[in-house]
Length: 221
Image (cartoon, rainbow, N blue to C red; front, side, top):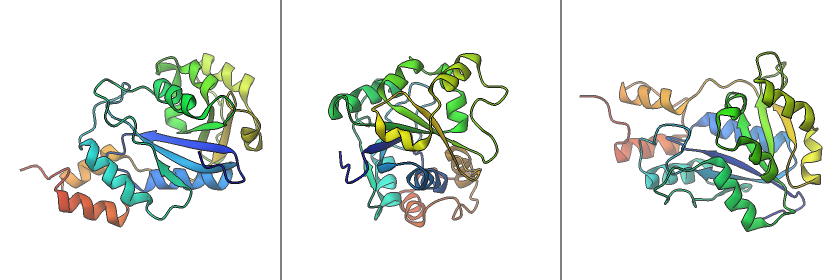
């Protein structure tokens, strides 16, 4: 992996169905606040934790390429897209870790909602043996606030670190970084497109043009 100067690689996974400006904002915030050399975008095939994507893999990949075109510190790993079996984050990280060895710092980038649901994920504790986790939190809402599941709160207490520490080891730390709230979701965008509503403020222009040209997420008849 390209580690020019900085050694940590951020990993941003999802179905990207479609990729939207909230995803871009999350990646940009991570690059601004964390010691990352790059963000590796990891589109999933058939995720084990959620419903199957609506758009085909090739369309989701094409939209992602359009969305991040020109981003010098962005890269795509499409190794999950061809899998027919359900894909889980722990398996994806295991594959990535095998490819980079034991010393490369990997940083799984999550929104706070996804992070709080971590105890429902397959072998969630194993994630921290494979990567650090960086959580985008709303300003004034630190990790471990009331309501966090007890087992996850215990891991936060044990593993909490400053962002600068991410490049010092390969895995095992949990850090937070502030990000202004962005109320955008792919499911809401699909519904808006289906209803014929304006989504130009939610999607990169090239992605919206692709959706329209390929007749993705069509309006109900």
